[in-house]
Length: 164
Image 1 (tube, one colour):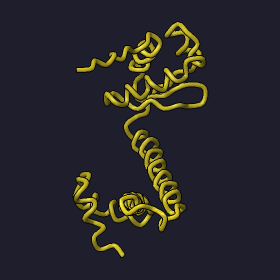
Image 2 (cartoon, rainbow, N blue to C red):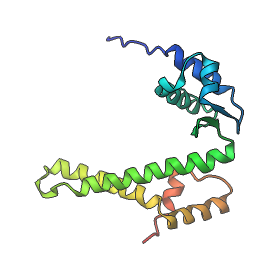
Image 3 (cartoon, rainbow, N blue to C red):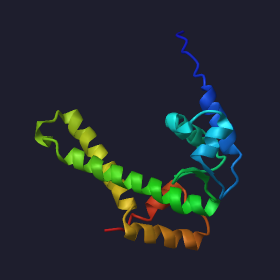
């Protein structure tokens, strides 16, 4: 059995995680204050700051967002509005770009197995694009309002069975 090297988190990222975890919801920290707190210039370690932010998000300890001149731990309401919108737009834009890339190929020249893969991917990306349209948002919002909580994936997809 092949052994893989274990990932070892660098001391810079570890220090950044420790300091960013201390932020309270709604609290910001400037780059200079963060640099002072961790003992190095964070502007020279920006990928480490983003990694620390991602680890905190992954561990469900809060949403840290970039603000002018520093970083801010979002309140729960801000996270829903700001981060929710940002990730929704990223998914929507990625689906639009993916559809564009797939429709630019010479479909007739593809092998049969590639045509199937093309159609599966195009169908999936098209469905994603549909989910992010304003009319779809209103449909989901109405169902969530009536239900009082978020809908499981399958229930959300059922909403679109009658969409033309």
